[in-house]
Length: 129
Image 1: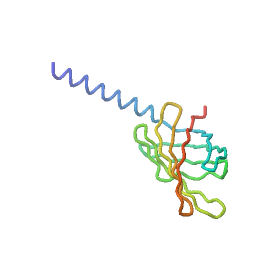
Image 2: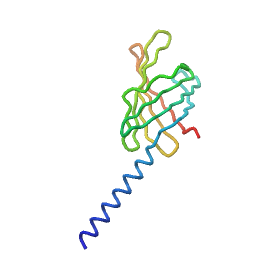
Image 3: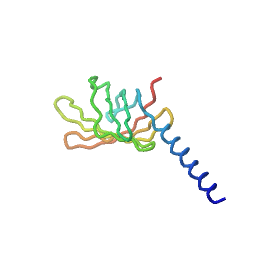
Image 4: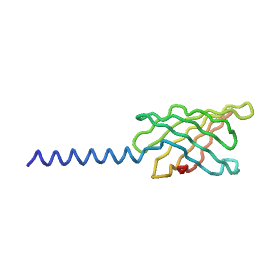
């Protein structure tokens, strides 16, 4: 009887891990429309690719239409994190995104650093269908 109970528990864990893997499949395009720290409306388009726990891809912004590569991207379960470095008017801006996948949405906190100043803002990316 004990062996049957362990097999059932093992099967439940396998199913639970499979559900998490499905929930964190972010491969494809995502779009976020948000208000920037300066109060102006912005749009970002994220193109994600996943290989294990490694997240790669690009970010295109309404402020900088040239795609920027994702740096140090990870995805662990439903947790996503990555960075992007941009150049605006000769100034380097480092952006660090962290979020949690929830179906077809990824609410994210963005930390930005530019010219010795740091600021934070929120956005939600939605899967492009």
